[in-house]
Amino acid sequence: QVQLVESGGGLVQAGGSLRLSCVASGTFLKMNYMGWYRQGPGKQRELVAAITSGGTTNYADSVKGRFTISRDNTKNTVHLQMNSLKPEDTAVYYCAASRTFTFNFGKDYWGQGTQVTVSS
Image (cartoon, rainbow, N blue to C red; front, side):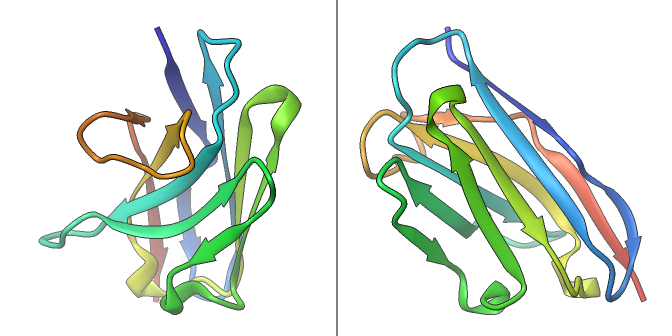
């Protein structure tokens, strides 16, 4: 059974940085799509950034220029480097993965979530 295990969340002051990591375990199959979503208080879950096994990336407009997503295909691992953090980045961040090149909210894989809190 595929499990996504996240690490790296925490509390940081505005302007600071955090790095999130996620590893997909329990499978030898490549996760062609890996990404990060977030859900703030009272908000819907939204895409933050995603990357395919070929290296194609997609970012939410709100994080472009501040966040960088990267992956290690040999380890089914994805990272999210978050710089210049703002209070509005405060949310639970979820790792997401799919064996296909697109992500299906109801059918693909989610991590348990890691809290990121940015203080002003």
